[in-house]
Length: 331
Image (cartoon, rainbow, N blue to C red):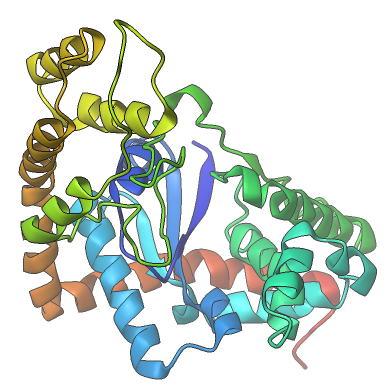
């Protein structure tokens, strides 16, 4: 059984894109592999969140992943900052990470361009912290998106550099857990090819959205003036609505609007109203779970403590071994 590690951003609510994408694969993986899923609150410090925002965001993410189906009994679900061993390994790896290679990182250059007034050391050494998150559990598989592939390559670099410097084969090489064909991509409501957070959050339907908000978002989704000839090619915004409908609606509902589009009789207002109601029906049970779990402080505390204990067992062993390998010895 391979060890899998995946970080969960500690900001932002889950939306349909997350649910049909990574989360459904996480739910399957947790029963097939030894999985560590952590909420990456250390990483969020690069944006300097207020203390109350940091805690609220971590709680919300924990609640929503539990509601979506992550099982704390099957997988190890923990909060990154609950493991001081991560910070220690981050420090130790930083001693063998070089300024030039970190500055060449694509995501760092992008952050410098986007936030020139907040180019902090945490942004520069983000790949080192990510490497520590992975190899603290000696993971061999890491589910990553395209934007994280370079960071995973750097994690391999830091792991192999440690092995080479200390003449050991202690850390295995972590590789991407490639979902490829299994990953369902849910498009955005603004006509983009990917559902995600936007400036006004109108591009995504979140699992916790109230029915009124869902209706508002769907009714304002981007469309065109309608087809003018049979079976004509659809613009991206219309493809998006049909793709979402295919996922959440009944097949006969989808077929009805598909035929209406092809014979030029479609009324987008009717389609949007139907789609909104189907999404509300689909997300309803998830929203109820989010509310129920969010109100159960005792359960959340139990989950966090259990995850901390399980992750600590793995991380403590790694740090003890690493300190011995480096030469930190007790007298």
